[in-house]
Image 1: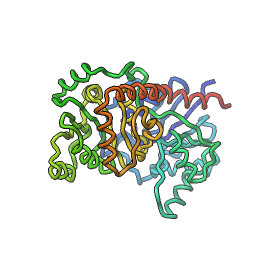
Image 2: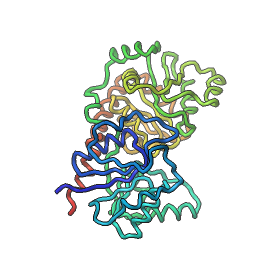
Image 3: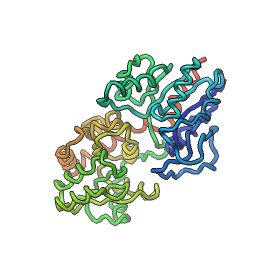
Image 4: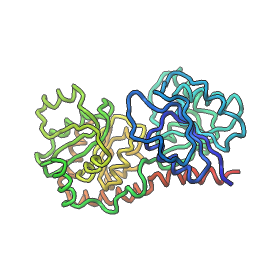
Length: 367
């Protein structure tokens, strides 16, 4: 029998639309979005495309994180759905939804992309604990997220793992790109240097690109470092001048086709983040057969990187290990090839199809 499932979430991010489309092939899915847009990000999805789920938007414009939208209440009725999953307890509207479900005695589940433990005062911890506790099931992306839940008193037996991803099975390359293919991609992008270290991410302090700039000063002259994601922050431009670093370039986000060219041209991928609740670019890089260097502050790295096998995990807030590991990888073709193949073996378990199946298997097996 088909199960009726309701997901409550914030905005229609492209990777979420893809996941819901896959899950909608397996269950009768309704997704309740708080809003269609956000003031800080422009999405490349088309809401007129055929969807495999019912999409409901509480607001046509930008989301308002701290303002509760009471139009959500009529959707929270007993026996309307077999499963209700809330995904953003920190948003006012979903906080209201969670508290309403509790008050009405309606079973629900909670899902997070990832979880990072932070030092916080007692009042904030108590409020978060009130919102987090009470679900029947907690969907977790791995050990880091398990610990986050357990920090708020959630027992291990209520935690259900799922593979988190933004890539389809068809997007994973069969084999790592060879040297000629990478060189041709570099030429198309206008990259003259022999080696390319790639990073992808928004120009935010927490992404740690100041650390990458310091590491780049220790790399061989034949190595280019490209960060795809936007213009550099003023302090990063100043640091480039201070250290006289000539091999780092920041480029704007463009089409997915151009981004794929960068992945194809790259020899190594690095995400020097101070903190990332997940870090989907790690999935993307591994799907392109790249060794990945990232930090212990990246949940995706902690879950997917086998240190020394398919990449490296280093302490956050450090740049010397970035330089050391990159120099090791850039000087050893056999090591890069071995890590590239190991990365592909791991990422094949982290696809949108696998993510949808993991959810549907649980939803469908229960009465």
